[in-house]
Every structure is written in C-alpha cells, then in structure tokens.
Length: 362
Image: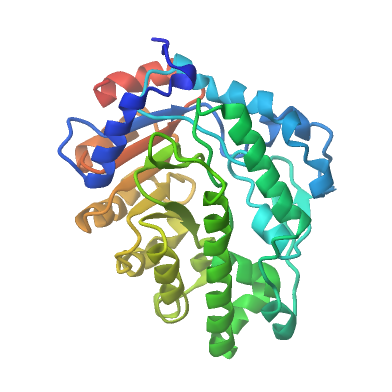
C-alpha cells in the first residue's frame, strides 16, 4: 500500500508515538521498517570519492550534494505501510563524527563508515577541550541542519544525529587503553573529565534544538525515526562495555543522570555488550526510554529476552532495532508486553516486510 502523504508522514501516526511514550494499552507494538543498513556510507553519492583511510575535513562536506539522497532514502515511507514518521539529520545515521571532530579528533574513512581517531592527550590537554562554537566542524553541523530545514519545508522532521557519549569521548581524548587505566589510577580526574564531557555533550544537542523547528509540536530522532512530545536526546555510552557495574555507578552514572535530566524524553542507545550494567542504567529514572540493538553475533534474541523484560518491568518504553527472522519475531511478541514497545526492523526488501507483517498483526 502506498501513502498519500509525502514520505509516508501521516500526522495521524503521532498518536502511536504518544501511546508508546505513555505505555498505553495497545493491540500490538509500534512498528517501523527500514531498508537502510547499519552503516549508510554507500547510500550517499557525495561519499563516492572518499578512499579508505582518507581523512575528511569540513570543507569536503557540501550539504547540497546530500539532499537528493536524503529524500531518496525517506521515500521508502511512501511504499511501506507502517507506523512511523521519517526524517533526516546532519550526515544521516551512524556517522558519529561531529562532536569528536569539534574536540580535535581526525575523522577517518572506513570501508562502510567513518571513525574518529583517538588523540592520547595528557590530562592537562584533555581538560582544556571545549565546545567551540566557532570550530569549522560545529559550523558545518549547523549548516547541514539549516540546509535540511530549508529542503524539508516541514514535509519531514529534522533532528540531531548520532554522537559519541562521555565515556566514548574520554576514550578518544585519552586513548582507549589509557582511559581504562584512568578508571583505576585516576578516578577523581576521570570523574571531573566525564562530567565536563557530559555537559559538552548535552550542550551540543541543546544548541541544535535551538535551530530546529518542532514537527507537529514535537521533537524527533532520525536514526530511529522516533517522535517525542518533549525535548529528546540520544544518549550512548558504548565504552561502558569495559566498565564494571561499580565503576559505572561511581564515575558515570551521575553524569548520565545529569544529561538525561536536561531532556524530558532522553533515551539510551545500548548494545548487547553493556547488558551487565543494565540494572545500573535503569536506576536513572531520568532516562525515559531504552533502545537496544539486536546483535545475534553476541547474544541471540532468546538470550536478550530477559534484558528486554528488565526494561519493561521498570515501566520504561523499549525500542528494539535490528534484523529478525520470523521465529525470532514470534518469540519477541510472545515474550514482551506490547505497551511501550517499538520494533524498528531492518529489512532487505519488501518481500521480507511482507513475510513479517502478518506475524505482527499488521
């Protein structure tokens, strides 16, 4: 079924998001399908000239060269009859480059994505890092947002992109190995740096939301096509895969609580590698929602059910993103409460969508 609304953005879909955030009684979960893979570099013609291990600079990023590809991706919403709105952000999804680049990291091209190089700074150098509004990368970020706002003409929402969280930025600034040693040898300095980075992280998102118009009265996250009625932030702490629960609680939990407290609809992005601190994350009541990737190479879906239930038992909305087989989808549906549940399913094409829709009751 094709949509009569551009990009499938029927305003009536907002009611489904409202029910998700409120964990209202529903017949089935909120469901969205996406044909965009984990790493979208290949989708953008503006990246075709980039070579592996090249370093990109802000001068290489011309927002006008990206606009047609943005809208081509969003057009999947006109063909897929699902529950979600679709929008765009500066450098669409999975490009966590702007905030690290503002902090001085060089951005290197990988086969399918980009990555910020670690800097290995001294403590004094790391403590001097700031959110410089005149930095060319910060200016490019706002330039991208402005270009998207003009191009969208309110046909689709504009949002922040994915960015590295405080623990990840600590690892970049000090070096991944040294940052782990810091947790043991320099806990006070580490706490001070994480707090500073957490404040900068929150400021970065707050600055963007001063520029971006609301969409039907709400905010948006383009990576997960997640609309919210209040200020939203996508949090992440991938580096906590190497933290102990006690270390997380002492050094990072207060930082995450501070960040989430500045946004009424903060949500935390998680990998299966961080499930051992999920209970400590759930202690932060200010985190309204949890997004957990399906990563069967690490923990199969059957092994993740206990963690999904932990989120639901804590009465938090749960967003599950990834690829599932029909049997895995049936297990999720049989095991979880549809209230406050959003399944963002990555599909190879319409044939796969058509196989999953009846299982979902769509």
